[in-house]
Length: 398
Image 1 (cartoon, rainbow, N blue to C red):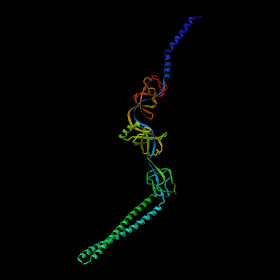
Image 2: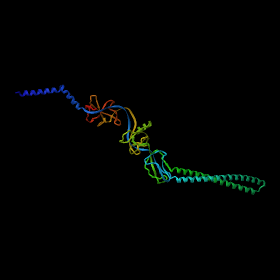
Image 3: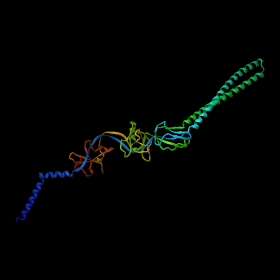
Image 4: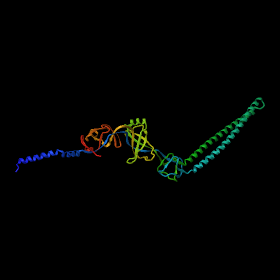
């Protein structure tokens, strides 16, 4: 039988051999596998040099380029409506027609008055001619009688009587001239009345002053309308359109500087709608900052060829101030927020990570500019940051 000491020695020997076997070649793969299993799986991206636009994102409201409230300029019965509600109409298209018969009669009456007064003017003109001839005749006779009275051939009474006749003819001439002037003024008044009647007749046909889309028809065919009373329809010009938006006053100096150097580009898109945004240019900068909100109002002009933007609609607006070339950019998902500010995890050549504090620049979509902290070509972690700590090993997932 083996003694207790022999059994103990045998156990120690087996334990020693087992330990030696774990550090040999057979044990090496087991250690590498364990190390690989401790590396955290992450996704990464390379920092790149790009041209980054500096933009301001806000919300805007679409406004019609022009809004016209159509009213009748004369009274009458609305006998024709030549469009349907919501139709696109062109400038000059006939929208409404008012019964023209009363105004046609007014033209005939004005023409008759004009013809009458022209005849009276012609008669007055003839009377003036006769009165002028008579005045000339009696003026010569008065001179003759005055001369002969001095020579004693005619008496003083005869000469005085001829002067009285001359003065009578002068008064007649003045009266005829006054009548002629009155007839001439009547002709001018009749001409104005005729032109007014023709203008009123033209108002019986109501045309669209702009190209745009009609709204609700507020007065139906057959109704009696009054001059300058209620509106008949409203027309919005929607090609082009304005988009009104506001930005914080902190950007005012930059906007003014950029606007003086050239046009400012603005984009507008419908929220949650696919497709490219409409592009336009800033056409208006308000002359004062809103005291209540601390913002400055701007307007962008958009061609709106596809009529995608609609008056009254709220849209997402992006105002582009400038472009920064050769700027380091990384995916925005790489940036984390800590107690000391923004940071990213940078993957080093040995697959360990380093935590870097970064200074952020402008963001465009899913990409953000890095002003300080990361160099172009370095690898940053985009997914899996929650499992990381400085110096931790990572395994890059495809």
